[in-house]
Image (cartoon, rainbow, N blue to C red; front, side, top):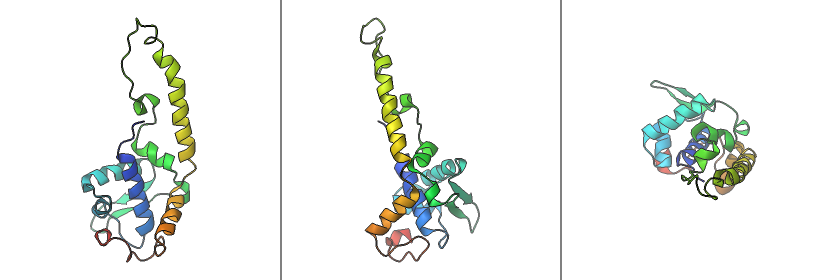
Length: 159
């Protein structure tokens, strides 16, 4: 299955926002430092997340981003759908087939239901994981960090 870097970048961005805001103003430049990406790429991800109702962005000198929903209301599937296609034919890039061939003319008809099943399984699994789940997992890895608290233990380039 093809999943671009956009999905992990979107998850990373939302997790970063959830952990740091509202105590710290979170900008695309700050997230770009954490994700080691270009701020323009991060802004484009922010735009898509905003359009899907997962993020609220404000412009200007005191601008930044914050979550549009509570972390327990945002699933990995929500994030995936915001930045990726969930179309089976888009996820699985299929080759051309020879319609005169016995296998070729029936290939998609026999393979498609299995690919659709795989996408449905991915969806079902991703719907069970929320941003809050990831925050809890992060807290287990970094005992000192808690959402909305001081960021002293984050890598220096994230501050």
